[in-house]
Length: 190
Image (tube, rainbow, N blue to C red; front, side, top):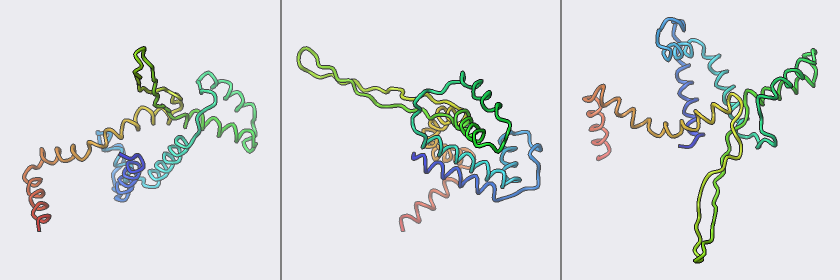
C-alpha cells in the first residue's frame, strides 16, 4: 500500500473522529483506546495540532538527506552544554542549536537500506548472482526509530484491514453481512 494513501487515510479518519465532540472527559473510561478516542473528540484543536506536528516531522524525516556522520547519543552531553552556554533566548546561535537538537534527537534519521547484487564468475564460465540488502543509514531519534520499527511495518498490516473488517462483521452479525453482500450482488447484476 502506498504510504501517502495510508497517511491520508489516517488523517481523514482522525478528522472524522474529531468532528463529533462529546461531553465526557478522558478519564471516564477504563479502556485506554476508548479514552484516547474520547480525548480526541473533546479536543479537536489539540488533535489537529498533534496531527500537523506529526505530519511536519514525517516530512522532515523523509526529505532529510543521508547523514555525513552517523548520529549517536554520546553527543548529547556536548549538545546540551553548547545549548546551556547561551542564556539569551532570542540569540540566533541558541535558536540554531535548538533546531539542531530537535532535528537530531526528536526527528532523527530514517533507516536507509540499499539493494545490492554481487556477481561472481565461476571457473566454468558461469556467472552467479547473489542479491541482498545493505544498511546505508541506521535509524536515530524518537520519530526516526518510530518510523523504522512501527510505520514501515504498518504498510504490511494495512493491506489486511479490509479482510479483518470483513471477518469481524461476519463473526458479529452474519445475517446482515450476507444480506448486504446479496444486495450488492443483485444491484451489480442489473
